[in-house]
Length: 454
Image (cartoon, rainbow, N blue to C red):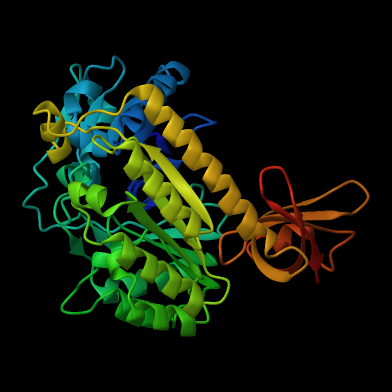
C-alpha cells in the first residue's frame, strides 16, 4: 500500500476465546500490510465482524452486531467472518451493507479484505471453502497492539476443529476435524507474546484437550510452556475425558499454570449424556472434578450445562440438579438448548425421536440452574474472604486524594477490586503487574473487594 492513503481497520468479535485469538492474528497480518489498527468506537475504513454460531441466540447477536456496525459506519467496508459465515453465508450476504462473507479458512486470506475494500462488491463477495477435509490450521494470537487487552492477557491458539461429534453441536461443520499446531510454533509465539509485555497467556482451541502433534499431547505442551516468562498460562475449556491424572500432576506442580479449569458437563444423567453422544458417565465426571480440586490448591472448576435438552424428562433434570449440587464447582455456565440445523439432534427432533421441551419449562429449568450457579459462586468466593491472594492488574486508577484502585483476576479466576491509600510508584505502572491483595467481602455481583499489599 506504499503511496496510498493508509486505511484503517477495526474488528468486533463475538463468541469464544478462539475467535478473539484469530481476530488478533488477522489484524496483525493487516497491520503488516500497511493497515492502521483502529477501534470500533473511533470507526474505521474496514470493519471486520467475527461471528459465532454455537446457538441460535449467538447467530442473532451476530446479525445485530453486523447491522449496528453498518448503521454507525455507513461509509465503511464491512466484512463478516467466522463460524456463522461458514455455516450460513447466504444469511449474512443478504444483509444490505455487507461487502464480503469469508468462511473459516478464507478469513485468513488477506487479499480478500483488500479486494472487498477496493471494489465494495454488490452482491457481496462470498468465499466459503469446505473445512471438512482441511488439513490446514491457521495460527491465532493476541498481538495487535491496539486490539490487545491492555497488554495483560493474550489468547494463543493451539488447536482447531473437533472429532467428538456430539449430537447437538454444529461447530465441527464450521471448523472441521481436529488438528493441532506444532509445539515449537506455539512455544515460539508464547515467547514473542511474553516479550511484547503480556503477563498471562490463555491457550485456546475448539477442543484443546485433543491437542496432538507427533505423539505429543497437552500435558507435554504445558511442560514446554513452563519456560515462557509470563506470570500465568491459563487453560481454556477442557473436555472431562482429558482431565486425567497426568495432566493434573503437571498443573499441580507448575509455578505458572493457573489453577482453573472450565469443563463442559452438558447433561447430568447417564441417559441424557448417552443421547448427546458425550464420552463419559456422571460417575467419571464426578471423579475427575473431585480429583482436580483435591490435587490442586484453591482450584476453581467451572461447568457448562445445557437447559432444556430435547427429550430430557423432569426426572432427568432433577437428577442433573442433584448431581450439580454435590459437585465442588466454583460456578456454572448455563446454556439454553438450541437445535442447530444439520446436527444429529436436529434429525432426531424432526423424526420425533427427541421431543422438544416446552419453552416455558426450558426457561424454568434455565432459571433454576442459574440460581444454583449463584449459590455455587457465593460459596466459592466466600472461601477467600480474609485471605491473601494475587491479582494480575488489568485496570488501575488514581482517585482524587491519591487513593489507588486496581482491578484484576486471581489465578483461579476470581474478579477482585482492591484499593490502597497510595502507591509507592505511579499508578499507571501497576497495570500488568501481579500484586498481593488481602481479600475482603464480596459485592452483590460476587466480585471480591480487597486491600492492596505493597
